[in-house]
Image (cartoon, rainbow, N blue to C red; front, side, top):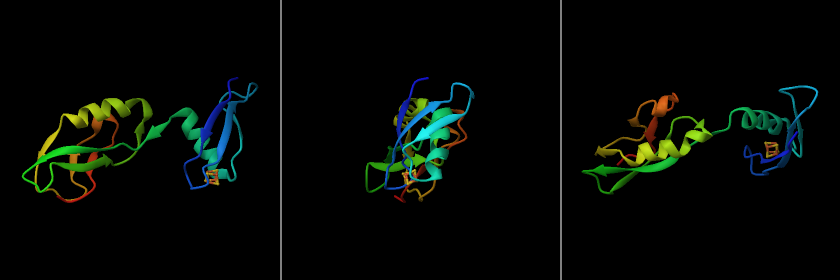
Length: 120
Ligand code: SF4
């Protein structure tokens, strides 16, 4: 089984971990290099279903700045990050907006909304 190198991003220590599936126990992982159990949980999540929070900006009209920062309301599958960024890049909104306003509902069917991260 191939060993994957991962860095746990759950705290500033950033433990460098070596993760591989146990040959005799499908679905079970051997995890080394973590300094606490959270690293093991992170390795399982990242191995089975890697997700990312996406941040970007959206064009806004009738506002003091030309673009407003946005992010996903919850992480989305890693392989949908670039398609999500393409969809976000096509959006233009009208100001003013409040922080937390939904710009795109349920982006790419992920259940995550694109929301503003500041009022503008
Ligand atoms: S394994 Fe634990 S100590 Fe290491 S980065 Fe993750 S949360 Fe921090």
